Length: 492
Length: 77
Image (cartoon, rainbow over all chains, first blue to last red; front, side, top):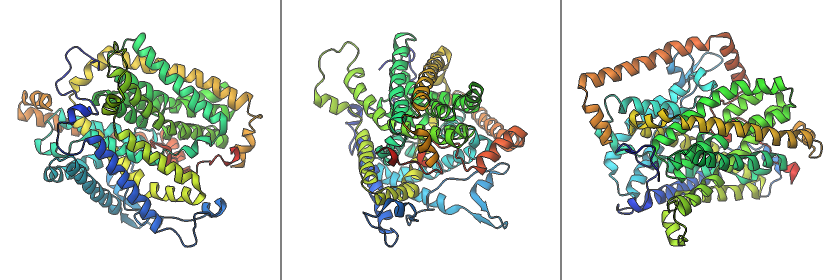
């Protein structure tokens, strides 16, 4: 893999270590640990939801009946993150009722801490790493992640889409680049493991049944334009900008064209990008997202676009899901619904992107540019990031249950809502704290000095904006009546 | 990690702790003073109020984090 500079810093390690280097360690490989443990968590989560299913629910119940079912997992409310605050950070840990009664929200944090402690200890045991060292270090790491969530919960920060990943990274960077990361904390600093485990859990939310939520028009905007932009941006970065690091090129292309931070995390793990490359891509994505969230609705209105065309345009171009929702709101109910649905369809592309990038990397990039001879299947298998299989398995199982019946749809919702969604968020937050704790500012300088990542993002996003506008205009404007989209959106 | 330790050991312990204190103080000023004031600026306050009224999770990373009932696409099947 190419380096960003001739003499990379000694600690510059891939965000995902190669199986070959890790094979020497005793215990289970990190990729398999993440896959097995992630699937185990998923099975437990689905089982907990299933045993608490409401009376009278059955597999073949009608969809209309299933929609009205109040199905809550028994652990609902036991996993969560700090809330929103404006003036006093302590407000993020308590709730005030309309009558003025204050209740402390310890339960979700205690539950998250306990679950992650057990999950982490199991992962360390699977990998034959020191569990006692993990148990000593983890509480401090969890506190840093909680601080990051509290920082992200400030109302201005939250409502302008400055996601927790940025603050988790900042918290880690500040410690590492001032007093240095204490040695005892190393026992739980394992960013790659948390990312991979979080991604396997994210697989449970990648439901292919959602793909046809807007029919062919939605698929064309989210699944035709997006790969074109991703590949074009990657090729542009390699051939025109000549970005030395292919993985950085790929991570920026994916986070800009697919769905921001979550796509950056998945792609970085699939192409074994360095941790500072992921940090840079996340920083770029969030900076541009804030600007686009504010500017794009105004541009749509100034251009006098149909709300559905504007919504599809916003959904297909703004990186972050939350920012799409906020921007779409300015376009009214139709525009908002279209924007969020297009983004949701694009979210589902994350699994396919991660898989294709992993295959491309193992087959072509890791073989070297000059390798024209066929790489054997066993070699591809050896290099392939195995946690992607866990991610795909989680997605396949949950998609099958989701598509099979209305009961399955509500069941998956109850499981995701109570367990996997929160755990996945905490794991990503812990991962970004670890990345910060393991990064020297100097490692980021070569990337910032060249300015190429920024140029790549701007050029790729410009192409994305133009192509998505064209496709949105065609599908949601010219062919709107043909697809009867107006009636469909209004009917909701 | 070794690079980090080498980099930080080249400064005195006082300098390192002073840097940490400086960063923490700066972050405290931003989060406890500047951001609450920004939150009260009319345009920002309007935006926050609208997002909260509509229950929009602006910081959502994935669609499952939204308080939203996604369409099933049944009309297309």
